[in-house]
Image 1 (cartoon, one colour):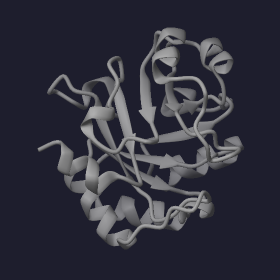
Image 2 (cartoon, rainbow, N blue to C red):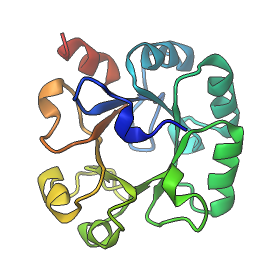
Image 3 (cartoon, rainbow, N blue to C red):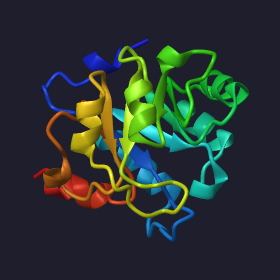
Image 4 (cartoon, rainbow, N blue to C red):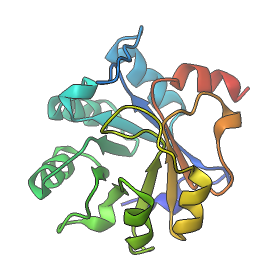
Length: 190
């Protein structure tokens, strides 16, 4: 398996390009899944595929993506059970995003998205973490910033949500996960 730390040889944060057609917070893409997938594959170091129906995803779309690309894939979803983590890996994901918990199985192949700074600070720094600026319970912004998250966690940390342009990338991000604004973000890179 390719290590996350070794994917981007340019010394820039990895770009995890998300195929996101909708969200439970009102977002609806003007592009189709196929169009977004092609875009994500063309620019992403990693392609993120939703497995959760609330974001227009499914395990079937994860399998389709695995058939269509050799790029590394992140299965994006809540993945509330270890069985879902196992299913995502068996379906072809290289990594699995897990929200609010550390799974009992394959934690080294997961990106852990804590719900709070307290949860983030408690994580083993050998794990890979994601700081999502969006509060998944409300759809609004968290009060805590990426800078506070970076100060609380010394390990590998991905910045996620509300990235519209390259100017939104914070110092200290090992990766950025860009979804709803992927076309605009790409244009801003020049």
